Length: 168
Image 1 (cartoon, helix red, strand yellow):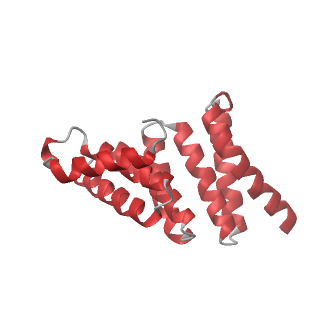
Image 2 (cartoon, one colour):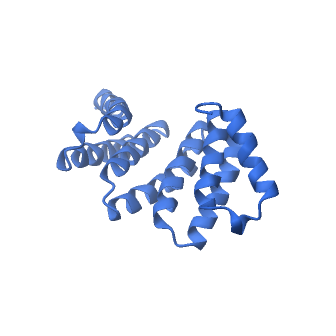
């Protein structure tokens, strides 16, 4: 059911209701996916609820990979809800853990998202700093060859740099 988020949501919810959680294979992933289905349906509060639940499980299991991934997903939700100050910390966690795991594309995308968030709260110097960190990482790690990172990071970086330039 590719891109059929209503059907996916239905099956994930049925799974949570009918299957004991300890019998679910990789429950953190399943809960994260449910949160993403809800995000794609623009059910922001429900999405945040399930992503936070997945994050709690990841923390209990000391699963730093999932803590970082879910952090970025939560940051995106809080951005959509215009809760910018609440959106920044999960992205910072994503950056820290992505760098530790050498997931440089993920870190660069999260850095550009943080830059954009700081711009939204009119903290242009912080936005400029994070945009530059993202650019530096992209070039240091040759990420310009990684289309996913470029598509996500460059427009956000360009917005920040243009806003910073206008404010000079």
